[in-house]
Length: 146
Image (cartoon, rainbow, N blue to C red; front, side, top):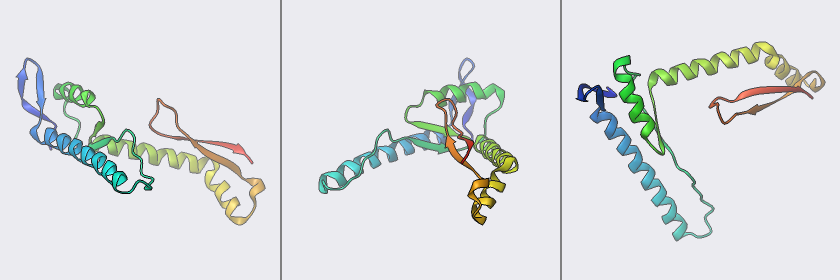
């Protein structure tokens, strides 16, 4: 899917592709329907413990455009509220980063600690917790002795 049209709209500005705009509108419609369905379910069954706050959507589509068209894409993507557009190449880069981080963690002793815990030798293991900072979308493992 092309994310940005090839034809300039005005000046150096390029419009989002019709396919991308359609995917965004479809996702926003699905979010709206989900929100309505939740209210309807709660109205029909007041005992139902169903809550939804700040429902957000994601569109996974296309590849990052070339430098010339990237600016227009970023302007459009960053203007959206309640919805994120992630490209396939961005998803692949995040997955590779996550896999690399997992490999580093395993090589740094997590695998050995897990093996010791499984064998029943908890005194030789450390505890691990996953933390996430507001500025990072990827959690980092922190360790400490048990």
